[in-house]
Length: 301
Image (cartoon, rainbow, N blue to C red; front, side, top):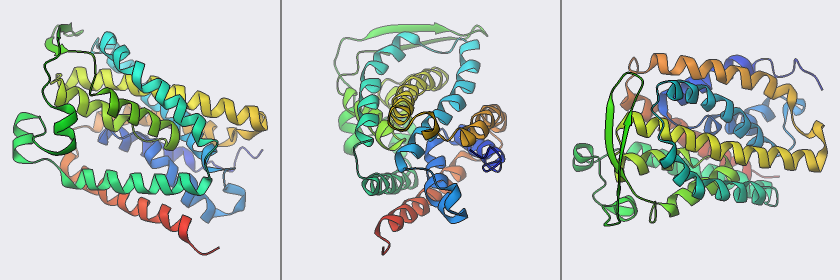
């Protein structure tokens, strides 16, 4: 195993982790196209064993990147652990199921699913928010209005005081309707490496009206535990099927320390880059990634 082969992934991973922290989209969404599209262009020695190996490495790397952000929120006392546990109960089992299923799926089917998901995320980012939603923070029509709309379940009044002495008051109830998107997000994360991060924040902010600092901190814990569970399932299955050499250690030795660094750089740049402009750029990038991934599936043999 050549430990100098993937040296260039150290600066690349720092850039990916920084972008992930700025956009709030998991780093795995950016790593997968690098592993499955760029690596084959560099030569046969760079190609990973399978799309499943790429998913496993992406999730493992993302775990360390988000852990870097988790430490900061934990120190600030912004995480509502009770709420996080209620969401994890739905996302983790689904994430493990998705990870197990991905090992049985056809590699081309995984690539197709990933490409389609990237195109969907691109449309969601480009669509933006209507004036009513921007003002109220609540969807007024369509799928999210149905699943995340106001409910009449018995609510629990929650209060959290951070390290700086700021007190946040909000309400929470067990996610009954929300369990569907939570389970779907967890399943897609295990299957294709992307999903849970794009579900939790809208759920906490748009349905439960959580204060943004508490929502961001709590969602990071949910994402970490879900991604960690799916990643452990992927890596364990790879080792069981091909031994320790099945895991590309010569790659993760560069990506893991790099995302820890990027996880600290991103928050420092927050506010210096227009979030609206960043969303448009990322949407265009995801559209290109989705099209490129689909072309790798349908190209002539």
